[in-house]
Image (cartoon, rainbow, N blue to C red; front, side, top):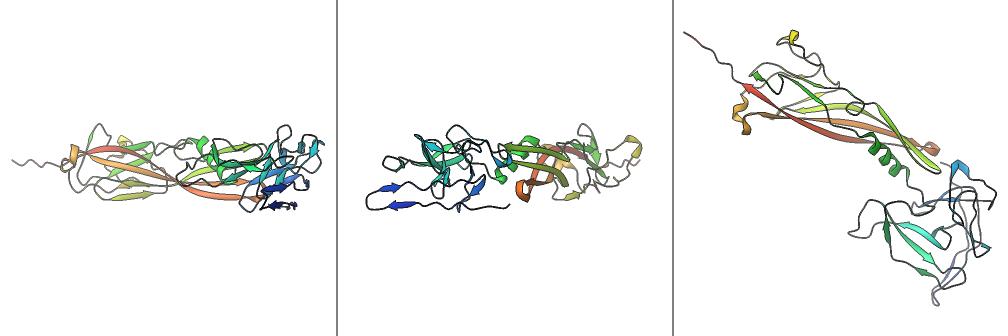
Length: 294
């Protein structure tokens, strides 16, 4: 992303505790300060501009609005103070020690114009303060949340209401849907910024409950009675070496974990990826083959 910088004259008089109002500076673009706070800044107050669809509220820092205080033009954004919300500058800050890590922490600096500058303690809010945009990463997480991704919709043979035998192959599969295998795409947006994310399952690791595991890069093939005791062509377990009666509850617990790869892209060529692991479980009964001789 091309970031053009705003330079403002900001003078703090340490001894007297006063602050000299910075000079107005406008530009119709997104501005990010050294802390990663991002804002919309507008070059021509009241002209209805606003690159990339940036929005705003009256007297705030939105595109096309310009910024003013009691009739005088003021900077929409000042590094170190944040974005103008109509009466104060608001800046996003890191969570305090022990503070919740979701949502947004911010401070407000007020009284700069015609008063005594003061700063409020950091406060939390679920949504971004006026004029502050969520990061691309945060929007990516919103897009992922909209997908409602699931762990595998487990299919297994022998069926959970029947019993298998020691040494016979086990078929494993995931009933495919957008939420269990993908691909699935969702977009999260706020005025001026959007992110589109796509999730696709990469593999399923089947933990068979006896210390063994199977990794499948396909959803697997559903078993049909006509297949008999054949092995699965793409996702199966060669067989248990002992009956499930040796386990607590008399059944093996099978856990299937899907590894999803989520890729996302936003404005200005911003991209990213992450892995999401989701699990499902079932149980299976395995009997010991009994040989009767006369």
